[in-house]
Length: 298
Image (cartoon, rainbow, N blue to C red):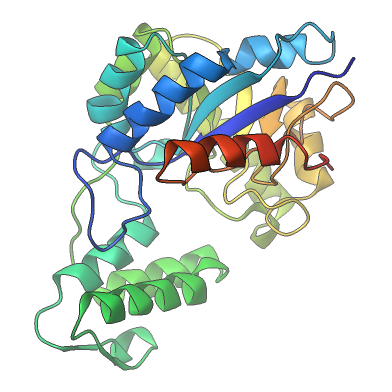
């Protein structure tokens, strides 16, 4: 029997709710999720689940928790909650943002969030002047900018983001925090150096991003890094089979995408699906978990 494996994606766990991003997970909601997972599912470390998946030895309702990117709040907020509930997790970290980094999307959010007045002029960054007179309009401008910048060549995107503001607030893990996650028994996975869309860069650049990102993490935690998460993670759009082949050639054991669905024994371990359970209510969370089990994995 092919017992499915649910793999959940988280990014940030905020200490308090963010009115501008009400869908973002905060500490209270994350703790609610963990209580539900502990009661109704069987949480496993991803490394163990990857090994047991093809063997058909997973427990019923197996689930893994993963985090992408490497935010500081993963250590400051999420880790104590995970430890309190005795839950394992895997943290996929983009190594280039360690020790004072800020990802480009967070830099854009900060520019719009902190802008004074009711209009924001971004003409020098290749955009226009926008009405930001209420929270809903600010959020709409943020969503528009993120969508417009996401698939630009990395250097062009970086230049345009830097033209919006001179400095940004660091949001990512320090090396010490990464080591603390590892020492707490959490898995550390690779997520490239600079979080590029792999299909937007050359094969040589992609190989270097994968290898160098992993090497930096292994140097910090002094342990093998065997798992990988594709940046952005949409199969056929953000990464292709050639990138999975690169991971195999470099000795990784498995990789996760952002395609929804549950993994089963026949799944290619370098195309494991994951999904984000953003529901506010307990019933909604459990219904989404159940519905995701019905989505056939690619």
